[in-house]
Length: 96
Image (cartoon, rainbow, N blue to C red; front, side, top):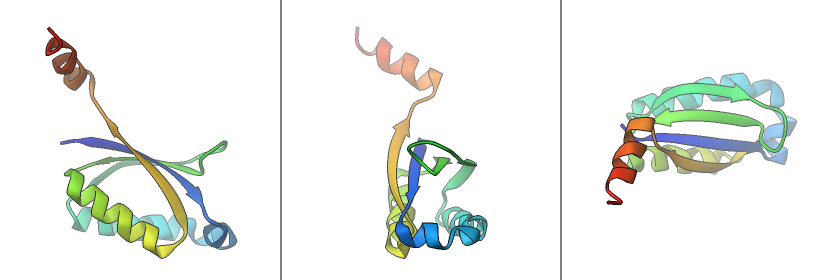
């Protein structure tokens, strides 16, 4: 199953309601799982991003969950497709 790493930053709205962040994550996780996306980990972070999530699921399902989350207005996200070691070995082997 494809892996995705999501880097999220709180919007002004999300920051004003920071105390709700754990509950918002639980709601996100339930919605993601209902859409067929597994949440492998979540980390609240310091630095350029406020959260880092690791997700696994079909690309279309991940995109749908990301769009629904963005529409709520609490975070802005940057989602990256991640490749495992085995996937990377296959990719470089195909280079010839």
